[in-house]
Image 1: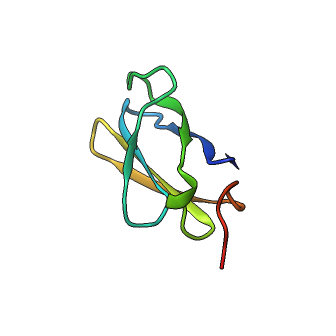
Image 2: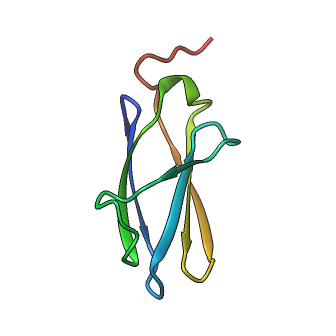
Length: 88
């Protein structure tokens, strides 16, 4: 979900602890993100990320999560216009 540049996402791995996560607002640059509790110590973590409106390109945000076994999963989410951004 995106509200004024804020996205809320969660990652879940039934077999391993998550060790890192990142978000991309333009499909090219990845920004590392931390869980709400600031510690990767569970198989399920939640994240709130504020994206600067100027970095969001298009109508999708990518989220990548990696577990301790180096398994990586990437998902995309459709978003609406970000407050303060203008499409030409």
